[in-house]
Length: 288
Image (cartoon, rainbow, N blue to C red; front, side, top):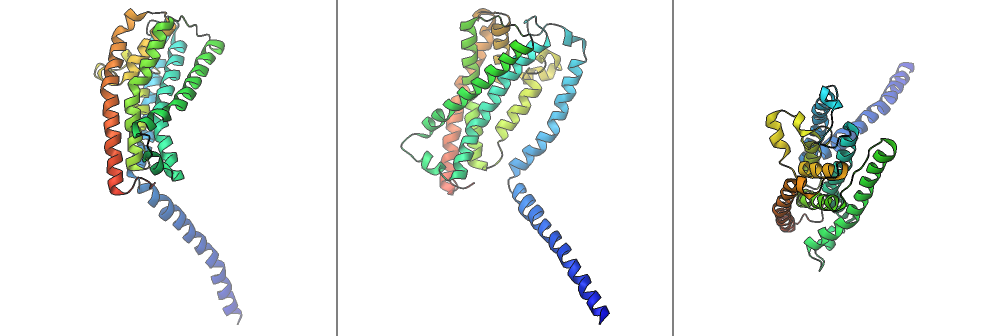
């Protein structure tokens, strides 16, 4: 009789443990990993996000320990702090621009209002344009705060040529809008994961001249740096904001940004319309 009771007690003590393991398996593997892996783009980009920063910090550490870290940067004559503050402010603005439209579309998907929004009398192109206004204003405020911190607390001195700065900043924004529209298109298509935004963030950190000059990179990689408009935009903004340069010295950078604007905005709008048509035909516009 006592042996039977002991056996029952042992089985009763084992049941909660097995139940905990079973539920942990259901939540972790079936609900967690299965859902995560069902979005392969999101899973791949997460892995990339873990690995790529290692190379970025390797390059940054090598640059900061080199003799070039004590010399003037990009003609501003103020050293690394001014170079870094401007790079961080404008790179943060542009990467936020890439994520902004995608986040808006993702939010509309989750609330179940995306289909009504894109099928409204307002054209999809106009929806994208209106959706950028608040985000651009908010990101401009964030950029201004970073520059203000640099000026007030870090000793950055701005020598501004106002007209050239305004034109440089406007072209910096519009030359990246096309790729931002492409990034939002991927959210329509893949539902989770934004390969354009993630790629651009990592790409600019490594090759965009944000944290160290492009000239520090090996010769072959310097060519890669000029495949994105941000590299030209940062050169123009640093020259007009820190060194007081006029239109003449930055004209090549401005022309390159005009080129990217003319090419990428029509491409982005075409890809968005193509993606919208595809998800409508598949019946997945409202799904997430």
